[in-house]
Image 1 (cartoon, protein in one colour):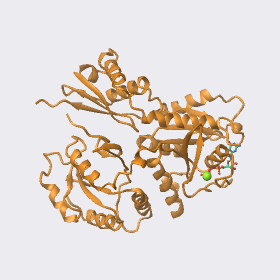
Image 2 (image 1 turned 30 degrees about the horizontal axis):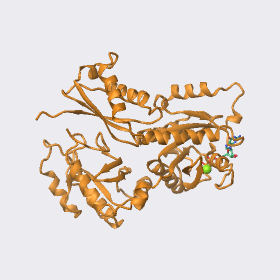
Image 3 (image 1 turned 90 degrees about the vertical axis):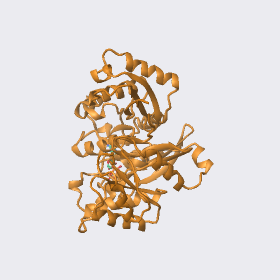
Length: 408
Ligand SMILES: Nc1nc2c(ncn2[C@@H]2O[C@H](COP(=O)(O)OP(=O)(O)OP(=O)(O)O)[C@@H](O)[C@H]2O)c(=O)[nH]1
Ligand SMILES: [Mg+2]
């Protein structure tokens, strides 16, 4: 049995509870340094942004490739950002280059930490090291009621800034009818029904291919960077335009970042009279199945239609994502998974022995079996569906990791 919070597939990120501390691991874009390429610089600027807020950096290296010349460049560059850096060598799984990690000591970042994302090996030791580098605990910060951070994302000109203005009922954010008005994410704090919120208005995001200027590229990276710091994301669409490929790319980014998402179909005042919100929601889910868990609300920043509903929806999703089930609730879900005759074969044939919730925001679960069974995507989707629908996580991405109990 192992405990590997925040670790899915071969990536480390998310909120982690470890050694009595709670901290967030942010996954940045992959870094490459090549001949002054504009987009690579933009990716580097995303890392700089992430580092401004970070207490330390984990520099992930590929243990199968060994030390590459680029790694030295990146190590030097990271060191110059002035925060502690730990070298983490990933995908070391015993069979491949068992001693290969030591060459990474040459980076001058201290002894490298070997982990296997796939097997969860070495993760506990790494997290112990992370905790040692965290700033001293400030009780007030970790226990104070935190504001819900809501990132508002969408293509240019869909009405993101107007929505926020309408919500606040004041002209706090610049509104203009030219696309590309908002450049930097703008944070606005307010209270609604006793809850603190921070609304983050972002620049309209276009597909990377159509991004022309460096200013646009940086605005795009900043908008996407906001996703990782948000508790919940609002994807704004234009009712008169519908769902475009640019929207899909952006929304997919939210889902792969495991953030709860709700959709605002804005400019509803301009929709044809025959348009119907329920049909709209169904059409969106049909067009993009990955959106089928995301609640949809049709809004108008112009008339104020449903904008408070949007806040309530976002607040509800944020609360859902942080929810911890009681052990009785987890046991009840486990009984459903174990006894459901309709479950896919991988699950039905596995000797399931336990389900546990190992984290929240995103809700993360470990499902343990006695024997190694062939779990497929079908099984994973099924488990996620049961947890989402019966565990009360309807609008939230849920993570599940299958574990096999080791024989002792
Ligand atoms: N009719 C109507 N017009 C709207 C609505 N929401 C926004 N608009 C108009 O759409 C235009 C763009 O609005 P913005 O709020 O600046 O759009 P944005 O998404 O913030 O744009 P960028 O910051 O460029 O990404 C403005 O002319 C708004 O007045 C709405 O609900 N109904
Ligand atoms: Mg704007």
